[in-house]
Image (cartoon, rainbow, N blue to C red; front, side, top):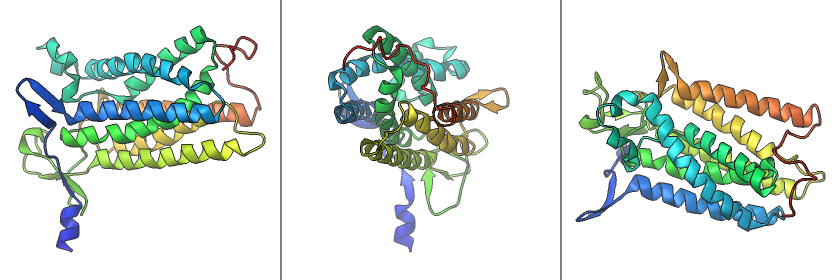
Length: 284
């Protein structure tokens, strides 16, 4: 029993994977890179199954990375400005952690809308192909929080728990050693959402009529946000707007948009508004 207890106690080995002179490879950056590469390959594979040119997804990936990562950082910095006001040069130190997935999603959506418009590709078709890759990337990326000893929850004495070194503990909690491993909760939740989206994708390939375009992304919005809503309530480092947790507010908004979109598709039986019409769309 003691062995099982120890296996459920998570202790970060530190943020640095490899260091040789000025060369430093951090777990956080490596995991982001892995998430991007895995996501690109998965979205291309799904595009082929949907009879969409996979090269479009490779081109889109460049736009998404250029937009999503800086927006994720700027979103975080905007709500944590007091940490960076004294030394703004730290804003670019993304390898030290401090990005917000909601900022990445908003930046990525803006880039995808522009890309779809310029390439004359339906936005919702792209969104459906990106959604499974996005949530899988989130599954991988959450482990960066583990290595950085950040984004943890309240103190806990449950068998599963995360050891936080004294230097990373919040003020007033220096006497607590173990906290909720919210990185793990969200990573497992994201993995379950990924399984749901992938199951719907392949089920739709053999269904007549198939799922309507935009369904997968809307399901992603609702299912991911439901998990983030309750997990965020455990965290001690939430981005705040006064007394309100920003991530919970955004999650509620995403749930509402997702539900409205699904009702629009299936109750009203209408296509989602898009940046291009079917007549304007270029051949895949």
